[in-house]
Length: 218
Image (cartoon, rainbow, N blue to C red):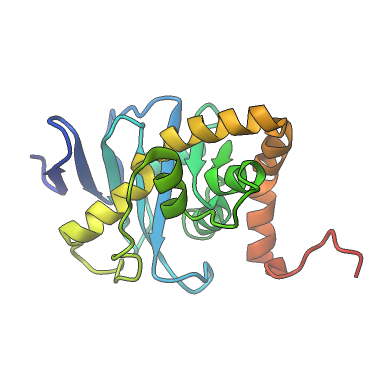
């Protein structure tokens, strides 16, 4: 195993979570549609540093990049996030996009957000968290035990790696389920318009309009 990487074999043979230090390895090809998530020190993108970015090609494998928080130099990761030919699937993309703009200086487009898709398709419920979605649509129980943990630690625990990986391993399958519901309900075009607006929504958050509805009358 190359220096700077840690691999934990799990689930089925050949499937693994791999931790990369600083950047993605050269030559890694995750395909035209990737699942993306991030871990930060908190929920304020101006104050709370971006620590980890996790990605998956939807093949059962997850790649985690533990960023160098002194430099944030991750050219291969930044190129992938900003590649207009690669669709990025998020859950609550608004937060991750703002963090990437703030700390990596990159606008991650184009975007698909499973939380927005859920709110437009699953109007029979107000439960749109990733845990709820995964349980209902995929029959997968996700643990949120590590949600509040120190992502700025020099070394990440196996429990942290497993938690971070789980947040991207099922997004491709969720997108497929939600797309079918959006098509059935005639809301796919509306969803796409929302996805297209997300980079601007993240920029508004960073500029100070995070709690203000600029479309409201008042």
